[in-house]
Image (cartoon, rainbow, N blue to C red):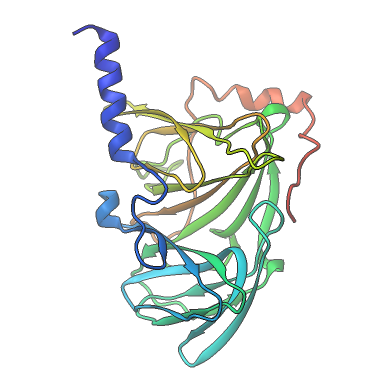
Length: 302
């Protein structure tokens, strides 16, 4: 078997292991129910629930902390004797959102008068934090990169921005059609002075074209020394890519189709520091941004 065949075989194997297609882990009101066990690791998890108008959904208590993060619509969060109203948003492409932090061992009931889609990015927790409503004003937003690498980042629980958690880090990235994000490729697979060990989930949504056509994007993960992985694939609305290790990036939005992804990260460290060194071969690209303008389509939501 030649080199090309071996590469294709490796990519097919890694794709089946590390890419979860929309609907593959759906059941009942859950569009996605990704547990650490299914991902093949210990910490990070993600659920996406569809709330029917006026119909409550109870999320059982467990050992995971998580955010109640609206993707579209708003909801009421009942937990610990409190009733918290989350205004939410029209879509991930139109606005940032308020949200709720839910600590471990807390049963929650979610209700939406008009219906909603809610992401529950989570992590195994080792410390107890208070249940907390987080207004839009606490979301850290910023523009990264320049030129065709321009993107917007919204931080909901990322170390110094957003709510303080036990182990969970979560942010959103909005990439205009035709642009690259999560680039230069970077990694977070071990603990050192400039790196932290974090398992990462990429959950994608792709905005439809003006006449309802369905778009797509591309995602890349490749190995670091001694830790092979080889993934380069199309991603569509509702797909998930798992990053257990290795350099990851870019994520590429097809021209004409804006891309959203929710990053969920967690690992064994309790310092909540996000450290992720670039692939040294491509770090030089950052210097080129100094002579380029940020894409005028950004910010896309605020």
